[in-house]
Amino acid sequence: MENVKKEVIGVTSNILPVTGAELYYETKGKGPVILMIPGANGDHFIFTPIREILSETFTVVTYDRRGFSGSRLTAEQDYTNRIDTDADDAGLLIKHLSADPAYIFASSSGALVSLQLIIRHPEIVKALIPHEPTALKYLPDVDKWKSSVQEIFDIYTREGGTVAKKKFVDEVLPGQKDGQLMLSKGDAPNPNEAYWFEHELRQYPSTDFDTDKLQAVKDKILFCVGMDSVHTMPAWPVTNLAKQFGTEILSVPGGHLGYVLHPAEFAESLRRGLQQRGRI
Image (cartoon, rainbow, N blue to C red; front, top):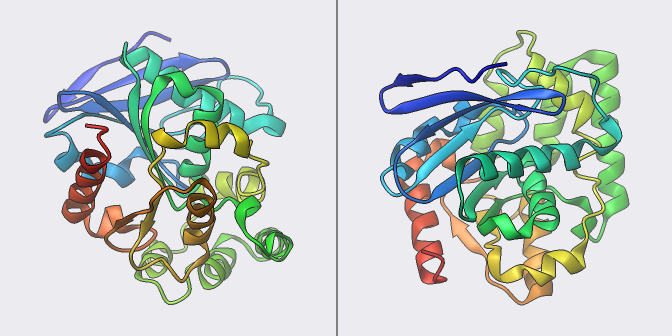
């Protein structure tokens, strides 16, 4: 398929054909590339508010991960290695758009993808900010959490996405505004949500990340946790990894969706964190 471009208020949209899919992406701004990898909904729109701010400093690249929204599948998928494919897709976008290593901000499921990306393609990453990746490997009670995730999936298969999503929020984001925002999206069928439940909910958090390879590039990684998240599970994996690696945690406003609820303050925290560590 030929690339199709359009300009909308300074935003360029395009399609990158890759093996088995077509990746829809948008760019805005000038300066070094920062790739934003979305979480469970897989959709670039989640980053629209913060993109408007970061585009004053960076060329911001947002995209729909394969199988979500505008990034349609064009062939049979290898779901046994899907996180590797997702990581490679992000790498191909970077290589397509920048001759230099890129900055990466990624959250939740997207942050899991970003960890696999820096393991597989460290040479194309200038700095990685993984925001609250739910990597079960780095929890002391990993078996308990795997059982919880399986229970959520079983509820999804029996009772549907609405009930399963409430169980997910109650388990993972109890009492958080972010969780309530997730539940406020309504009960209408959502193909993105279904795709995540079926192909990511159990698989991505259970990834056996190569910790030695992560430690080898720890100077490129700025682990990131929301100030309102510290007592919830999404904060714990990277908190534990940072302790293991002897690195700092970047505290940012809000919780699991802080970049949505507090975009200006969140963007400033990202810039300041990168500057203080000499990355920009």
